[in-house]
Amino acid sequence: MRKERVLSWAALVTVWVVWGSTYFGISVAIETIPPFLMAGFRFLVAGLLVLAVVGPRHARGARRPTWPHIRSAVIIGALMLVGGNGLVSAGEEHLDSGLAALVVATVPVWMVLINALVTRTRIAATVVAALLLGTVGIGVLVGGPGGEVHAGAVAMVVIASALWAAGSVYARSAPLPSHPMVVTAIEMIAAGVMLLLLGVALGEPARLRLSEVSAASLAGLAWLVFAGSIVAFTAYMYANSTLPNDTVATYAYVNPVIAVILGVALGDESLGANVYLGGAIIVGAVVLIVTGRSAKRRSDRAARPAPTDRPTAPEPLPGSTEHRADPAPRPGTAAPAPAPAPATCTSTATPEDTTTP
Image (cartoon, rainbow, N blue to C red):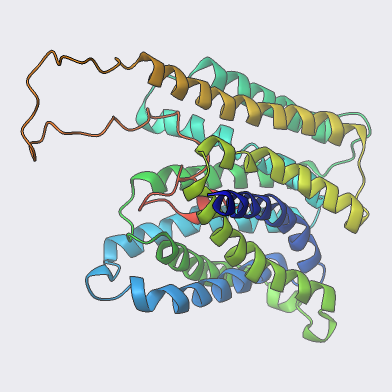
């Protein structure tokens, strides 16, 4: 038990650090590789590697993905990896990686809001407060004291965050293969192809000079492929299966802090008052969402009637449909982890639900 706990926390720390580092990895990779081509190559290679490992056992025979499975995975990949990651990669051409990470930290807020709108459930006061806080935080990042930020690039990353959240919400009800890594592989392969085609359509091949691609950009790309897309997801899957959901969900506000630290320490990025203040407000909005869900779950558990020694109704017969699990969490209260992961890892959860760009 002690060894498992140590491994669980080691996996979570890996998620904190590696997913937090992907923003800096993107900034280094796009120094000499155009953003959509870089992202397309990243996901195509990572997806093919994942499929090569899990496909023989989990994507054959009765477990072979059907057309509805593939269609859903392509839609999710288009929303989360093309619209989400692709736009973040493009936005980082004009933004520091740490600042981009702070904007993306609003994803859990967008997820809860979009889920409430889709399911037509009442939007809780905490969600409204978190959305307002997040909006104020982004405003401070752009126009706060000491801030000279490319407003268009920030808008691009905000749209990316909303698309990422929309894909996460869609993934929860979409028909998908039973094994989450098969889902991930299909999403990444489809998104990789779409991103490469988008890069070609935008004329990025004319900007790519193979002889000028730096070793640093290649190292950044390799880090994104292996560490960011494979190692960190595997660590997430393990942590998510052995630690409480609320503990795993801390990635949502630890990742941007790691991103800011790495950007300043390794990338010589600026850290003005706007980043301190705006970042603190955005992280506060995420904390409000995560802790709000935790409190809701605890109150719901406390409200359930305690078992009595003498049942008030006849016990159901073995195998009858009266033996049911507790109802699923209420729409709009799910954690950003599918699982985002993210949502917690169920058969329809995708790693990208939680993966940062």
